[in-house]
Length: 248
Length: 248
Image (cartoon, rainbow over all chains, first blue to last red; front, side):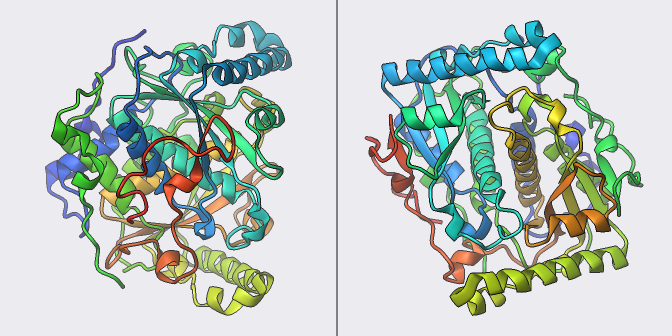
């Protein structure tokens, strides 16, 4: 477990120091710093310290999720809170089953992957399954050419929940290592619905100071400048790269 | 244009008043309020007031996006900033073309939909196209059974950008009304890449006090309690519904 490296808002919000005028409707400087702090200190957590999440706290988090944007305002998110220990253990068993299959599919990186455990499904204070509801084909607005925008909306909801959890001092991990058909059957999901996330949520001993997969040398954060083009793919953008773009 | 209804953090963060102990690592009360404020006051904007976004401000927003979670830390997001006016007009023309096709597909709701313009693509200070990169099939971690998790990660990045923009006082709209093949061709995207968003970003006269599609009576926000189950689909959760769950 690593200690938390403090987020330095001054590294992000430099303009306020030099007094550049802000647009109307901007939050105050401390408010903006808080939003950036949540964004930069959020981590995909795999280690939890047990404990519990108060009901009203969980309601705030779920309400934050529910206030995400959605394509055509279709709100394509459903949350199944796993309270039964046997059901939770069955969810964990499905994750463990897929973990082995993924490791095999990874081939030469199998050993490396196998060290990344999914114990969080058993240890976290709360487990929430997020699913897309049935009947989504009735929603055409913004989805005629991109039907997968329902998933995009649900992901925005999960990101809201994640950031709110970080602000509340709770860790969260998004586990997508499961067979959606099997998990759907386990939780009596109707035909046409689809589980997209097993969220592990709860108190943690410490937040990682960098993404766990980077600490484990699985991958490194790319330089932002390499991901940014101008007017067409591969054409470098003219903006200077910020000093902190790949810092954490 | 509607006036902005103030967000009341007291309606969200009730527990602090009664002094319930917070977990370690929790942000301060004003910081938590700021994070919830961004989440609850963010809107999918369609009306912009021109102006500009400073380069360092745009860098902060893009860096916020780049610090989103991603499946297997694959960072499957690329940003194309549209600076050329003719390119922007071509993007708008593609959106307008698909808007007409969507309206026809909507049948009886066609007239209603046609009132919802996509003028923001022309008016916003900035237009950013977000795309998934080619070569994603090499990333198996967390995607063997759910390959669409790349899109989910990119959506989290867009949500980060959205919340940071709101804190900075900038509006953003996610337009998904376009043909991805045509937009890909327009922007020289390589085979295997896919555009998922045309983001309109910039100063606005005012933020909507409720989602625009709700104000336009297109749809209403569901009650959170109806979206929350326990241990299986359709089994009502035992938690009391919060007073503010469907308030804004």
